[in-house]
Length: 476
Image (cartoon, rainbow, N blue to C red; front, side):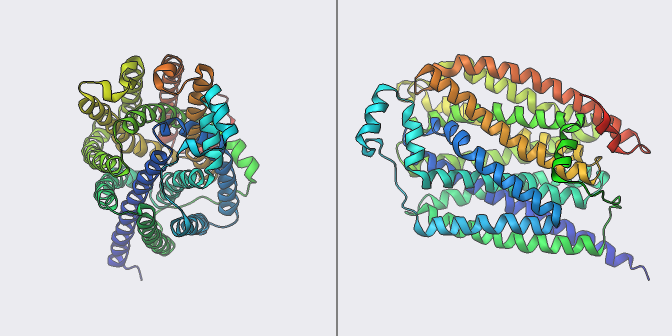
């Protein structure tokens, strides 16, 4: 006999597990971002300019391997097994690094004489030599990136998209984003506490391990709830190969538009963030000061995310999907053009009269970029996946979120690396004009993509009797 009360209780339990999962995942994500900044600080005052080379030389190949691994697991099993298969190895790596690493700021003068002599002739060689010699810190940076990309960007939202209907998504996704904002605030408080410890890496490892174990339990409970009482009637799955799935995703205009939007945001935001990071590393002299800054940064970021989510939820009901989705490109485009058009921001911060005010002004604008990304871009992006069928959703999300975000991060690194190599310099004032031109072109592409995505999304959601698979046959 049908038990209505039991179904209601299961729904509440599912929402509680999902809410806790996004909260803990966001806390872990931002703690790892804080640790990533510690690694950059350990590379010295030029640490910000190491990141483009790390993205190209290390993040690119390792991310490719991880995505192939994820797709192969997902194809043969399910999302629960894929979550375990990705999370457990990452946790083991962080535990190993926390136990055996030797934290400390890198001194480029201790490099071999033949390397320092080449660096004197051509300064950009410092970045390639540094990440190669200090491979342990470089690898840690890479896995910090991987942790955030997989646990939050791919795995959590993959679970959410398999758990909620489009109607439920419009109700609960803004709430999840708001909980993410609360997670950012909590992580900021934790980062401030962690900054007082002598071995920040070890305390971070302990916290991430605890969060990882809790998340594994939560995902298991969510999966059990999903099996017991599923609100979504899934179509019969079509067995396709990984190659066919990726080809299908790339040949679907809807997914291509999504991928273009994600790549555009990644490039513009990464360039802007690296410009701000460069000022921070030159302004503060100790690891504790850097950690305190990022702790305060995440606190303000969390407040903005929560505020933006309240606005986003109201706007989704009143003005619709497009006007909420286009807010993020508008903010990002204005921000990147501001910081690259005024290269004096990147002059030695100690020579500036109001360094602290300028730094926090640019930091608040960066917080706003993240806030509209989490509150406006992410919910609308995830809603855009739901009209797709199972295969399109799985491979499309992997291509757009996974490959797209990696391409965006790596492209931002490639753009900056090429600019640094061409200018043979080591500060942003020399590469700002080149970056400004490239980012302007990317901005135009983003506006084109979000407009096209709006058209395909409206078409798919309005065609009740037409399967989304028909979009695969369309030409871009």
